[in-house]
Length: 217
Image 1: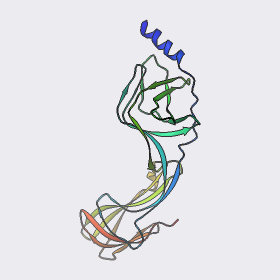
Image 2 (image 1 turned 180 degrees about the vertical axis):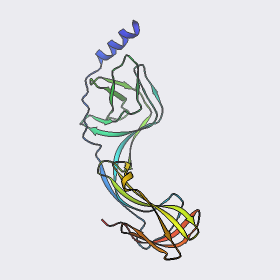
Image 3 (image 1 turned 135 degrees about the vertical axis):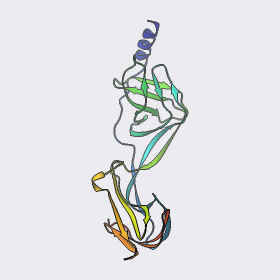
Image 4 (image 1 turned 45 degrees about the vertical axis):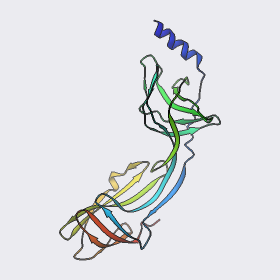
């Protein structure tokens, strides 16, 4: 009974916070790798050619797990979902709750220095905790992000295997993925969807090549 009263009291004391879902101030960064004419050595599984747009998104990196009475916040990265004049808001996947607590909607951190990390419930209640965290950013294929890539999968005899992958909204697009074999006894110049490379040396573990052209815009 005492625990229940404590929970009710805490919920009554916190204010109501409205989560802003207006994005994380994303900035699109164009990616084109490698440079045309550049000679590169790559290992099996490495990306040989990349082109597209990556999104720079805000991230809340919780460095040490927070064990609270109502909510537990695991040590991991949380993607920014929005901001207002006072708070930055982040996703809450992985945050767990006490059975007596309201469902979780998002995490919030005030823009001021040394602010607490707050769990925002679906009813707008805010429960805040001292936490070891960093506000940072990362490049991600999300939102408007799109990337094409060729991957080296190794050599058997005179044939090499190249994988093609497309990524959109931070996920691979299986319908657009493919594996292609090329016979080096016929030609050392290979291409796929407009991207073209000249194979200088290829083995079971690595490949050395020169980029002739990247994927077209």
